[in-house]
Amino acid sequence: MIYPASTAFYGAVLALLYVGLSAWVMAGRVSADVLHGDGGNAGLEKRIRAQGNFGEYVPLALLLIGLLEAGGGGPTLVRSLLIGLVIARVLHPFGMFAPKNAPSQFVCRGGGILATFAVIAVAAVALLLRVG
Image (cartoon, rainbow, N blue to C red; front, side):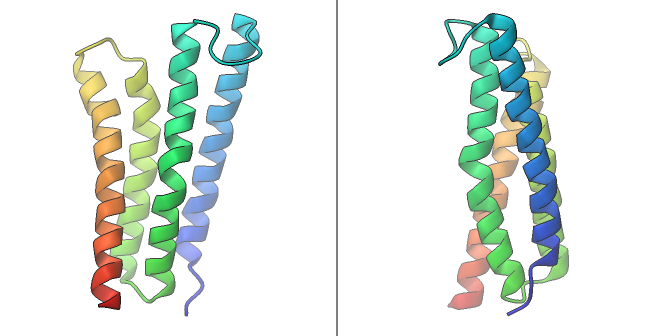
């Protein structure tokens, strides 16, 4: 088994993005004077969901990519998946604040989550093909 150095590096980058999203949520809570939940504040709710969405999808994606890399998966595929994941997760929060039905909402939010799904699906299929 190979140490998944690329996944470790991009995992650290994604961890810093998560810390940034968490700080963004905390700042929203302070400015809205909300200790728990979103307090009915739509902007805070969007911040919370952007952070939550990140926390829901990124760990699984990193696990799959890390297993692929550790199992000897091609470095081009691994790096492409990792770069795609970073781009997707950076785009998504911008789309959360785009006006409804605006192109930026579709590109950033929709594109971010679709790219995240694609990364997970490609990594999963690549793992299945390596195992089977």
